[in-house]
Length: 118
Image 1 (cartoon, rainbow, N blue to C red):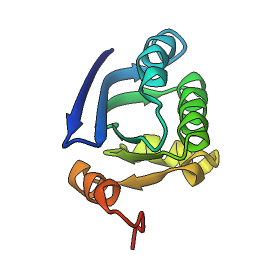
Image 2 (image 1 turned 180 degrees about the vertical axis):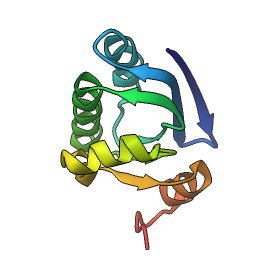
Image 3 (image 1 turned 90 degrees about the vertical axis):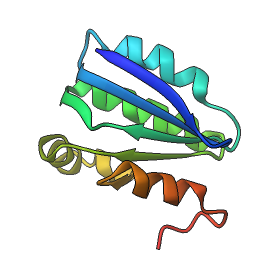
């Protein structure tokens, strides 16, 4: 697994994991994600490079979501493969996240001052 962390402007952190997120790689990703949590923080998780998401990966996403939410921040997922989107939808995990097909859509949503998605 590789993990690239960049910023988009002054206020959005973009995290782009690539490869499988499973029981072996989830701790590494968690160690990269949790330090990014800050009050009012905005994180775009670009999942376009993720080829597999296990239950450990789902748990990690939920933990990260809860940390972000408890700090009045926002997280957006982009680039979910059909298989991963279906898995997240069928398990109810997708209900916690704003998800968009493309990174540009997610960035536009996060940059809106009013926080509205429509």
